[in-house]
Amino acid sequence: MLNILESLPAAITAIFTILIVSYYALFFLKIKKPPVKKIFRSITVIIPAHNEAECIEGCIRSVLAASFEGKKQVIVVDDGSKDDTYKIASKLKGVEIIRTSHSGKSASLNAAIKKAKGELIAVVDADSTIHKDSLAEMAKDLGRGNTAAACCAVKVKNRDKLAGMWSHIEQLYNSLMRSIFSKIGANITTPGPLSMYRKTALIEIGGFSTEGLSEDIDIGIRMIRAGHKVTFTEKAVAETNIPYDAKGFFRQRARFARGMLNILRRHMRLNRTMIDLYTLPIFLFSYIQAVIMGSFTLYQIASGYLTYFVSKGVFFSPAVLKFFFEWLSIVGFAKWSYSVLIGATTLDFITAVGIVSTLLSYPLFFIAIIKFDRKFDLLHLIPLAFMFPFWLMIMAVYIICLPGYFERKQRNIWKKNE
Image (tube, rainbow, N blue to C red; front, top):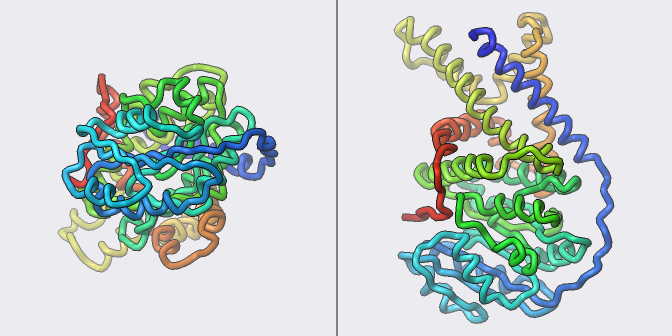
């Protein structure tokens, strides 16, 4: 049993390396998009909002300013807000407002879909803004073949905040993954900051599910299972504001983790579709990797601190700072790799795979930054140099939320800004 536990990190790292290689293969895979066969002349943009007084005006104005050749209907759903969300939204012209009791995002979207007049339905989170050409570019992609849903590149608007720097890198990386997954029909995520759907396809599958906290993934899976395609529009961009206080950040991450567990419990199955053979197994592996590697890494850090410092009566010193700095930054990996290179550290299987997987992972972050930001600055450099603490925090949340897999019923509703 002990030998199995000791070999788990090596096995997980090896699988992770194989996955990274598959990402590179998809990145360089050339897929020609089918021609645009249908031009849409009407769109309904739905903005679900619960306590979004701080951001709602900027969101609405960006939607009103967005280009679209045809009729544009904008519906704001005030989902039981306790702040000035309704008051602010009602002052803006060109907007229809629906007020509901706090019933959750999916229920809000479904209520708006019933009043939607557009051929297309776009969903924009109230804490986000969209770029001027985003609606037009996504509408163009939805006119290709049997494409029924489209997503875009997502950036973090408040990335100058501490947590925002790391979340921005994460969002760029996730956008890159969605772009390459969509090449083979394997993208299942239509993120909240901006996604677009054919109204007929949404009605066909019964709208958004009110079960589970990850309606943006659930809808993508159900679209694909119904025989539709979910694409990625590279020229479309949305920018979102992320919670930057500890309470808001951990509440959001817990929601993501619990939502993912619910998706895996409800949708994981043996099938021949690409999402069953590739995407959902990757999501499952990512969660398992977070729990096992997170636990293993936290144990290594804690045991090292106890062994080398606490056991000797040293709780805080320059050496302790150096110990944690090397663990939590890329400096530690650089020193470890150098020690292997000069022969000071034995090059065994797990060491070799660990080095290879890390060396392959980092270029993907740089590719995502250049592809979607088209620049590189200090706010990119800092999180890249200290990705490990962010990674550990996410892993800790995944571990804490693991019992959520056994939730019998998970409602698509949560508190925000309360």
